Each structure stands twice: as structure tokens, then as C-alpha cells.
Length: 387
Image (cartoon, rainbow, N blue to C red):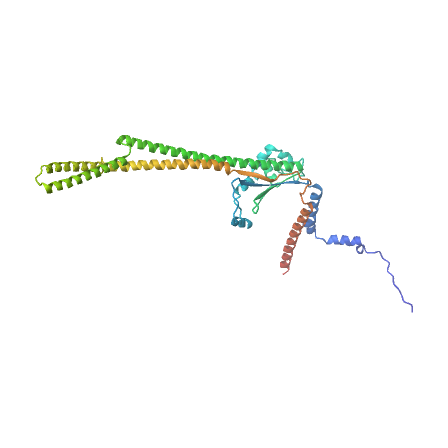
């Protein structure tokens, strides 16, 4: 018995061919994946690889310090190492100026910023102002912020300025203009600090001089009114006179005692008694002139001491104000701020921005994240409906 063989002759299924397999695979790709992932990646690839204008980066490094700045202590270095600033507020002032509208206005006075970042040198998405933005200074300021950045290293105290432009020479001249603006700001800060310190010192000296003149005038009026120069010396002389009179009275009493012992009826006793009474009257008058009444020297001495003390204090204040003024003048010359360039902005050789493949990968990562999040949300909604 012979074996029967059945042969089927029919056209091959197109799905079995490689071309059919690729078509089937493409049909199985969700439309949402094509919209959310594939389309943005293709658009980003088209833009970054074919349209995006290359950007050149000019970098400069500088420090802002004072000529009298001291070296930080070991504690200060340790604190700087953990990220605590070492008092470089002046550098931050320069940073704020570079990122300000005033800084842009000064740069515009030196270089053609509108032409450098305008439509003639950049693609539609990179130019300043943007495609749909109204031409104005505000749109120019916001647009140039994308291409100018300044940072600060708290460990070294060095500031870094990075400027991007579509031509090498443009990046260099914009960096030079920004650094020149920072230097002019530092010079203005120096002038203002010097002017404020010296003006305050001069005003204090003028006030101290007026106080000294007023004290001298009051003391002169007092002397003219009382008709003596120093009541203290007058009181001292009066005290010496009282002492001499008391000594004379003591001698007379001793002499009277001796005469009375030898000749009680001597006529000299009455004479000596008269002299003693006269000297005692002089003592009372001298003591009354020194103290005891409104016209005595005690209240005058008190008033004189007040005037003399005021004159002494005013003279000391004038001396201190004069020394402070000289110190302010010296400090204003010695403690000036300086913007020192460590690295000058040079002309870049080749563009380093934009990072094309990195940007495309970033778009891909974001698109996949968005798609994955949406897919999980949709799956969760389907399960909740089925249950």
C-alpha cells in the first residue's frame, strides 16, 4: 500500500514575512506612545541636530576683596569648608549687579546686545526676544538671563562668570562689559563709603570745635564778671592767709601768757589783746570770703569747676574727633575694595552649548516618565471599573 501525500499549494501569508512582522509591530504600538514619546523625541532630535544654533561660552573668574582684608582663622576656614560664607557680601553685591537691569543697561551702552542675541544670529527658539514675545527691554532682559550666569565658591571665595553667545567674539565682549560694570560698581561703593566716613568725621569735628568755643566763651565771661582768673588759686591764697593769721594769733597768745606770768599788771597786755582781736577779725573776714555766703568763693569755685570741666571734656572730644577723622581718611585709602580678575574672559575656540545628545536623552527620559505615569493611572482606572 503506497503512502498518500497531500500537498497544499497556497500563497504565503504576508504576516509571516519580515515586512509583515514590522507592520504588525507598528500596529501594536499604542497611539498614545507615539504622541507622548516618539513625537517629542523626533521633534527634539530635529531641532537639536539640525536647527539649534551652537553657542560659545566665555568664562571669567574674579574675587572682590579689600586691601586690608585679614586672613581667616582656622575656625573661619573650617566654617567656610562646610559651606558658611566667609563674609563675601561685596562679591554678592557684584553678582546682583551683573544679574540686574542696570547691569544690562550698562552693557547695552558698550556692546550691541540686541544684535548679538537677535534673530540674525540665532534660531527662532534661541533668539532674544523669543518668537512670540513683544520687543521690549523687559523681554530682552528676561531672554539674556538664559545666557548669563554668575556663581560663587564659598570654599575659595572665587566668583565665576559664564556668558553664552552665538559667536566667539560676542561671548568675550559681553563678558568684558559685565566685568567692567562690576568694577565700576566697586569703585562707586568705595567712593560712597569714603565720602560717608569722612563726612561724618568732619561733621563731628565741627561740632566738637563749636563745643570748645562755647566752653571757652562761657569761661571767659565768668572770669570777666568775677574779675579773677582762677577762683581756686584765690581760695588757696586765702587759706594760706588764714593759716598765717592763725599762726600769728598763736604767737601773740603765747607772748601774752608769758608777759602775764611775769608781770600781770603790765600795760603791754592790753596792747597784745587788741592785736589778737584785730587778727581774729581778719581771720573771720578771710574765712567769710572763702566760704559762708552767696558772695564767697565756694559757689564761684563750683561754677568755675563746672565750666572748666566742660572745657576739658570739649577739648578731649575735639581731640578724639580729630583722631577719628584722620583714622577714617586713612581707612578710606587703605580699606578700598578691589575686583581682581583671576581669569580673564578669552575667546572660546568651539561651541559647547547646547549639549545636543544630552538634551535629546533628557526629552526622552521626561517623555517616558510622563507616558509611564499616564499608563499607570489609566491601568488603575480600568481595574477600578472592572471591579
